[in-house]
Length: 222
Image (cartoon, rainbow, N blue to C red; front, side, top):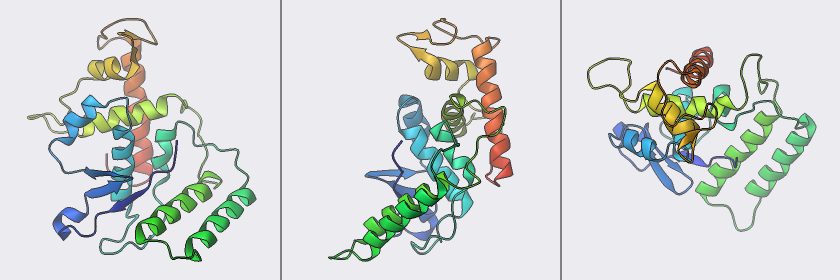
């Protein structure tokens, strides 16, 4: 997956600025009432991943609220959407790559635009994080289920139940239909429509619960 180039839209009023991000060429507003429906329409596309990264950045204080200065790296749980946090990248190689990128970024002629600077700094941070000691997959966390857990979490998070707090209007069974189906059938069990007691649904719930535990460890609200 390519690095996500994201920056807050600083020209917006302060009340909106914290939840609105520019992701590559798309604007994502975490407070938009239409976001849940858009996520359902693009359940297996890029939108859930983009929203996930914006959500983690928003809650990890990655950006100062009134500038483009980067405060610190995002919470490590952000990389659950890639499916495998463990990287064979050599630390020295990562440092060399990031250094080369930053030198080109800061000493370019003509000077880089502010957007290019933000994008380049983010890419350098991704390179360094890929070789850091934090970037290790723990036991009991299947690689292939991590991105699916992220998609399921985001879809449920931004489709809240109208009357039940901490619940979603999207059932676990429907999520399994959306995320596991190929050509009308589940790739895991072969059914066209899941029931709650199906193993696929239980596996999805377990994966999301593991994600939520990792979020809590990183201080990201669930």
